[in-house]
Length: 194
Image (cartoon, rainbow, N blue to C red; front, side, top):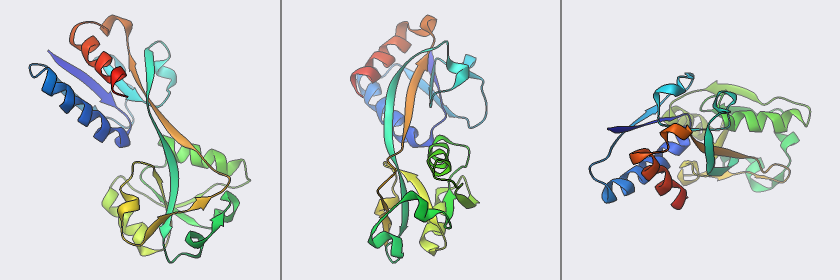
């Protein structure tokens, strides 16, 4: 029997995949199906759902599995990358985001709204190569998370935003009736390897 996992967070794919590989070393006979869905709410077909808090998951048991800081990146030649800035100083800047309806953008947008503006997204894409190219062009700022490879890009820096420390939280959700057998074994493994 395969353990069916649905995840809604691209950023967690690497983390959950590493845990699956580690788990497989201990239990080589257990297999998995890991599916990414961006819009579906077809939770019932899965043993485990990895997601940000979601109303449709209200009846599920869960535990926080992942928390990462949200960052804004710019070319190191951008004047903003040379000093401390406030969120309001980004009011007139353009942004690239990997998807404007994901949690990272929602948290960032809420913080901007509290300061009286909405961030200007000039490019929304689902391809990280496109995102990289947009940031490296110098035409926009990139919105990313702490586990991003963006900081390893040449000539790119995290902005030092003094009044923003948002983060994205991912949790593992499961139904009580699925907390048995191999699923329980894997969930316990995850809980012990946070």
